Length: 459
Image (cartoon, rainbow, N blue to C red):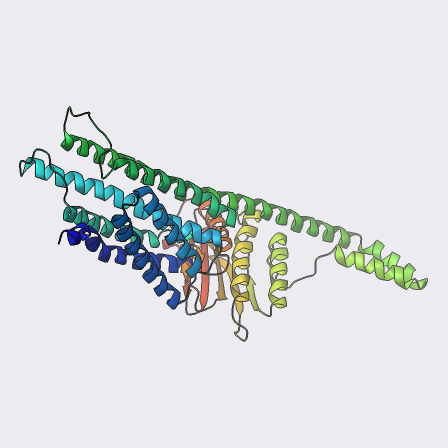
C-alpha cells in the first residue's frame, strides 16, 4: 500500500499530462508537417517515456536535474524525428512547448501550493503544514490543466512567429528560451521540493515554504513576460526589417522603370536620327551592323504592353507583370483608369499594384497543373474615391489568416500586404482582403479629395 502511495502523485498527473501531449501534438501539427501515424506515435512515445522516466527516477532516487533534463531531451528528439520541417524550426517548436510547460506549471504549482499551505495554517490551525503526496499530485494535475489551456491559446496566436523565417532566425529565437528552461530546471533542483529560502529556524518551516513559493511566483511571472516580449518583439523587429528591405528594393525597381521610360522618351525624340542611320546602313548593305543597331534600340525601349493607364510608371509596372503572367499562361484582364488630378504619389501606386500583383502571380503559380488561372485588375473613380480591386485564382486548399497563407514562403505575402496597408492607411484609405471559393480578392479604397471624409458612406 505504501508503494502505491509513493506513486500516487504520478498517477494523478498522468491523465492531465496525456491531455497536454494531445494539445501539444495539435500545436505541432499547425506549424510542422506530419502523418497521422507519426502524430499518434508522438503522443504515445512521449507519454510512455515521461511515465517510465518518472517511475525510474522515483525508484532509483535519480537527481531531479538529471531526470528533467533527460525528459526535455527526449521530448525534443521525438519532435525532431516524427515531424517534417527544418531542424531549426522543429527545435524552436519544441522549445516553445517546453518553456510553456515549465513556466506555466511552475507558476500555478507555486500559487496553489501557497494557497493550500495558507488554508491549512489559518483555517485548520496547523502550525507547520506540509503537502502530502496526493495534494502534490492534485496541485500538479490542476497546473497541467492550465498548461493545456495555455498551449491551446497560444496555438492560434503563434503561427506568424513560425511563418517563412530563415533558419538562423529560429536558432536565435530558440537559444534564450532554452537558457530560461535551464535556469528554471536548476532553480527547481535547488528548491528541494519547494523550500529554497531558509530562515535558519527563526520563522519556521511554514514561512520558509511560503517565501520560497512566493519567490518562484515572482520569478516565473517575470520570466513569462520576458519570454513573451522577446518572442513577439523579435517577430515584430523581423517584420520591420523585411518591410524596410522590400521597400528599398521597390524604390530601386521604381527608379529602374523611370529610367527605362526616360530612355524610351529619348529614343522617340531621336527617332529621326535613328531612321537616317538605319537608312544609310541599309543602302550600304551592312546587315550585321544594322542588326546590332536595331537590337540596341530594342533594349533601350519599352514595348507597349497595352495597359495604358495615363501614368507611365504604372504602365511600365503593369507591362512587366502582364509579361510574367503570359509566360506562366495566366489569363490577364486589366482595366485601370487613373483619375484626373489624383494626389497619390507614383511610387505609392507602384507599391500598391506591385505587391498585390506579385502575390496574385505567386498564388496562380502554386495552383495544380490543368487548373485555369486568372488575374483581373479593376481601378476607377467611385464617388470621389479611387477604387482598386484585384481578383486572382488561388488553390482551394489555401487559407488566409491575418496576412498569411499556408504557402511555402508565407512571409513574402505578409510583408507585401503590410507594405500595402501602410500606403493605404497613409492616405486614410481602407484595405479589405477576402478569400473564398478559390478566388482571392484585394480591394483598396482611397479618398481623392484633401478633406477628410467617411469612406464607408462614399460608396
